[in-house]
Amino acid sequence: SMDIWQSASNSNEYLNEGWIGRYLDAQCAGCERPTQALEVDDSLSLALKGTHTKALAMKNPSRLLNPADEAFFKQINKNHEPAGADQPVDYLYKTLTDTLSSAAYIQQQSRLHPSAASYPKTEIGSSLRTIASLIFSDINTSVYYLSVGSFDTHVAQNNKQARLFTEIDDSLKVFVKDLKDNNRFQDVLIMSFSEFGRRVAQNAGNGTDHGTANNMFFISGGLKTAGILNDMPDLADLADGDLKFSVDFRTVYATVLKKWLGADDARILGRKFNHFDFI
Image (tube, rainbow, N blue to C red; front, top):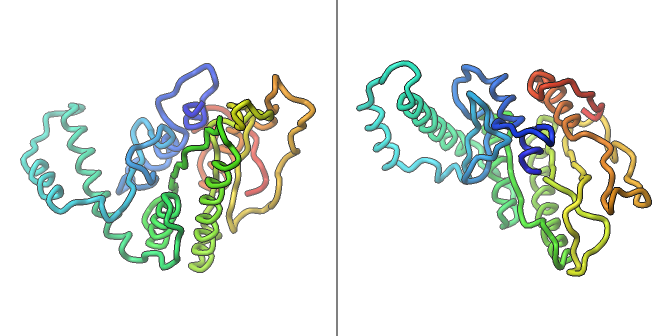
């Protein structure tokens, strides 16, 4: 299910590129640096992988570039001679060069305007502080991607969800205030999704099992509409114990691509979807 959410594929197909990766392919051909999308993590998610362009994954800009490593890799680049058109080794060296350039650029820019806000001392708090500092530094990044785990609450759901949602809520409150204090709230759209919802009924372990329909949240100073955007699900009309979905999530992606990122959503998603009016 995560592959479907990240690639925007049909349920009966598998795509090697993510929907944001295809956006990068469409929008960023020939871009100066491969930093148009950044994931705050040690590895890159499918969502940000394109055919020709990929995002960059990093957790902490201050640890992104080790001076000793930089000297070592520069020496490798210096000794490299092109092997010929379309050779794998040339592709690897180009990737190495782009990565080093991006690492130096991000590390340098992240020091220009570090966030002065007091973020919670949690992983999501630290990640949002990193994102805020990069936004304030005006690097050429359109998309930041962040994951929060441990929501598969088959057992003892109440306490786990209370802790997790509190961590998210506390961190987002500081992040939003930080954006507002720096006059950037209008420029930022926060979008959340989960790879699957939960079943309506509680299980024997005081938790809930995997469900189908899910929800998405949006926070921004640039939204045209606030509140709940579509009808609430009917708890008396379930599909084998699951909520019935009413919106194809790719309609949301199409809206964000077209109205927020200014991209050709039909080309990126492979077909035409309707758009919401909240942006």
